[in-house]
Image (cartoon, rainbow, N blue to C red; front, side, top):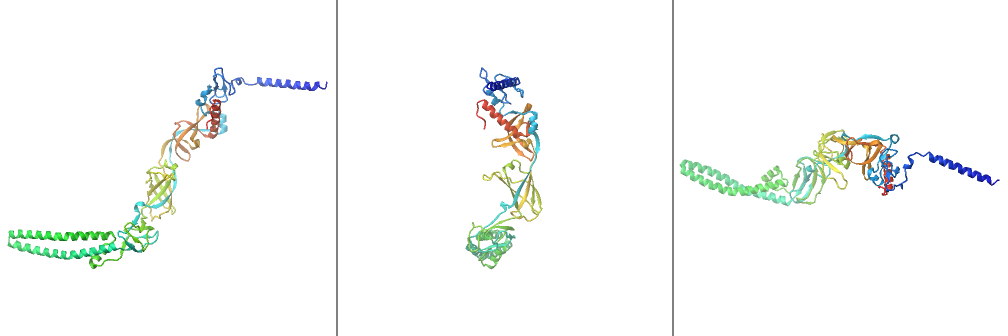
Length: 454
């Protein structure tokens, strides 16, 4: 009797469980038979799946009970709607998904960069001696020293200069008797012509003939002397002789043992290349000077800024002392630096004061307005495979769309390719949509027997 009680209890429990299981199966929806496992196939070997909901699989054509889309054959499903997902309105609200349309908009952008005042390369003065010799004294000895026009720069002892001076003096001495002879001949010619006029026409003709021959003889003597004198004089001027020095040399007939070189214009010393006691030649740089009145502002632009700027853009320069200069962008270098991938811009600038080379300036480039197709900047997802947006389709469907972006502002970004005007894209929650699309794509590829996309 005692053993029959446990057996009876077990039988009652089994019966109750069977009753509960029967009622559970009866409560399943009528659409459940249409939802098959990944292995469900028809007699002809075809399996149908919803492109938006890859877990809806059946062995005959039909519609998806969730979104109403026509089911497609499993082998074509991956290509029919790769990575597409369906998100109903309630879920979109939970995810915070907001939509915006691609539209044409006027974009402009102020680019702030730093600029440096540098010397105009075309205004750099490289001071070299025009005669070889010994540098005996340097009147300018430090970088940054200001030089006035006509100021003595250095003194040079040159054998070449001495030889030229001696040649000049010799030419003057040889030319003096010839000049005196020419003066005397002119007086003779004048007197002879007056006598011939008193005698008659035939005598005048004879006198003119003799005077012409005499002048030709003088010309053959004086012309070589004049050419030599001009040649030596020009060479002396090239090595630094002024008019006053030449006048003194012509008057005193005493050579200068040391030549003084003078500045041809006002400038600032940028580099001192030689020191007293050095032997220098025509190719030796003694000083490097720059003209601060012709300064340039140099800027560096980075790759993300290059699409914006163009010649003629308005530029504002702000210096530390409060001076502001407005100008236009000029001097864009055509080549990008291979090492830094930057582009240097050097443009002339005129200040109301003497510029200080090396001084910094805050530069603002006001770019030209452009009418371009654009979307909100938050809609673009950047990845190692490119830029994407989540494009909105009909009935709550979304698909990732590759795009080629262009110029951008703080709020919008230009779309060069991938979207048309009026296309709707997600501007919030797109990362969650992209993740869901990736999961759906992976599941669909697995059902189709393909490797998941990486």
